[in-house]
Image 1 (spheres, one colour):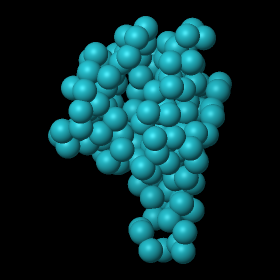
Image 2: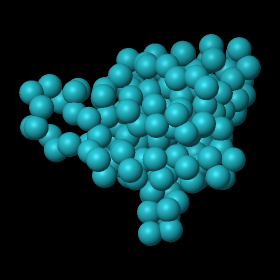
Image 3: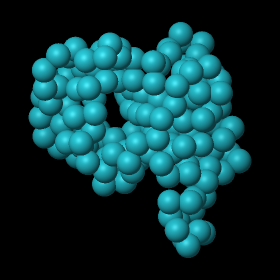
Image 4: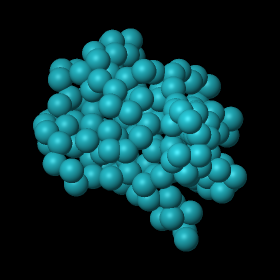
Length: 165
């Protein structure tokens, strides 16, 4: 199973909104995220489902991915909000895999995405992997069994490499 971890695009500065959950993407963030989504589409990457943090900036990123044809299905998940539960998400993933899911994108936040990836690959967070804004990380997840420490990192790229900047 392929899991793609995608960090939300560039958002307005912290402190510009009373509630951090409401910070949207900037115009530049929208443009760059669209360019990344188009490049992923050109690379023939598609998802059975895009699971997204409920925060505005992540939801906007996920909607751009969906609008540009990377998936027909988008679902918000409280597990992907900052400091969301990795254990609860793993339980959700087990159910999703058992129902035949093979291509999943999750749109979320740092440092959670990097820490979750490290747990999947190495079995524990090591504070080494970072997903840049609008960046993508790909992890191969075993189709059955606990994926923690048994998954394989196959792709980690910042948006500038996807876009040839």
